[in-house]
Amino acid sequence: MMRVRLSAPPWYERPAVVLAMQTATVGVVLAAWQAVSGTLVPAFFVSKPTLVFPRVWNWIATGFLWPHLIYTMESTILGFLLGAGTGVAAGLALGLYQNVSRVLSPYILALYSIPKIALAPLFVLWFGLDLTPKVLVAAFIVFFLVCLNVYAGVSALDEDLLVGVRLMGASRWDEVRYLALPTAAVQIFVGLKTSFPYALQGAVIGEIIASTRGLGYLTMWAKGSFNMTNMFAALSVLMIVAVVITVGLERLERVLLGWRRAER
Amino acid sequence: MPVGPIIVWENITKQFQKNGRTVEAVRGISASIERGEFVALLGPSGCGKTTLLHITAGLARATSGTVRYDDQPVQAINTRTGYMTQKDNLLPWRTVEDNIGLPLRIRHVDPARRRTLIDQYVRMIGLTGFERHYPAELSGGMRKRVLLARSLIYDPETLLMDEPFGALDAQLRLIMHDQVLRIWAETRKTIVFVTHDIVEAITLADRVIVLTSRPGTVKLVQPINLPRPRDVFRVRFTPEFSALHDILWKAIEDDYKTGEAG
Image 1 (tube, helix red, strand yellow):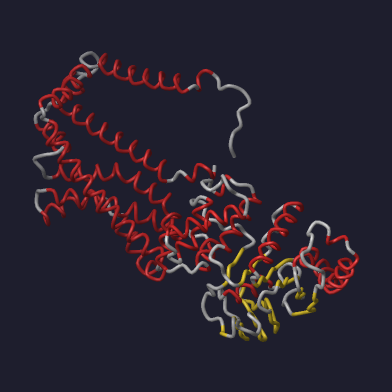
Image 2 (cartoon, chains in turn green, red):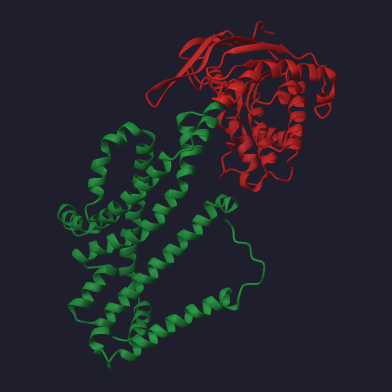
């Protein structure tokens, strides 16, 4: 049900006010961090905003950050693409061939329930220290999330719509293209959107276990040298990257799934 | 011009398994439909009308008996028929023009020809200006018209219509009846129209086939000799219409009475 407004929203619901309050929240948290650092908590453990943000800026200005950022993004994006591509294909196949999925589903669920982090050491042993194991950890996580979402979407095909396109003379491929994929599109996007942060997670885990580059490596490097300013700087960069990507995917979803707005 | 009936039902029986019990939807239906004829299948809800339509379109198989379409047994989905369902099955993610054009895409009609046909049919159903709207943005009547255009655009010889206007208000239905009769007069398609509404059946059809309640059997075949073109808004107030209404009501009366009782 749509809520119908009979009067203007109260002042605290206006977008500008909400944004102002959100900004204020960040300000309060940062101020609190600054205040407790060196007073309630030793600055050694928590660093402080006035050190962390200049450090991030310094990394950007000197170019120190770029090779690490690019390395992490490379494995994240490659892992995401690999996992999403195979995940969509496998989800579609399982959804359309229910006989196959009946047989395979317990094994898929078993593989799905392995904590993916535990696979990182195995992949490092198999594929060495370069990009491959990081890509694979990321891909593995994304694959299952996307596959299960696509499968759920395709399994829920509307019988009436299916009969409709069949009567128009649709081939199997037409059914996939005009019915299954658009039906699953919502689920596919949910899968893609939720899995991207996991792709980043997979890449970072790979770097933490064995690497000499990347944002994950930076946190290990900061740990090794007990440098909390570097630690928080690396974490800040990771957070910004994840937020930018999530917002980007939301925008894309809004463009591609515009028809759903009409449904609400 | 080929001769002979376009659809022949030979002793059609259809049984379903439901909760371990066998349910008989239709039993021993035999009838035939001529080319260009407008036939209404009339009967109470659940008398197997939809089942018969499904078998005719090749969406389901008869348990025994055969359907012949243009003298060939129907063994797969019959793509020479257009099917308009009771439920609106437009694809919600496609706009009006993309929905109407979908059968053409599936049939690999080239884009220029597709464009021409879509424009022609959008004009025909009076939805010019709504081409880019999604189904959810249309009224129920508009969606029915889009469905009608979609089932006509690839020019199937036969149109199977399963209570297509059941969900519309009374006045809107009359407008749709008028539109269907015009299209039928222009294109001379064969139309099989399923309904439980006696008035709708008489208004539209050349012949009404009355089915009994489950299992559906043919109770009566009644020719409707009202002159054409018919004024759908007034034809039901003529004495000839009343006479036909009486005949058809007598044919289905008992089924409604027993249906109410048990």
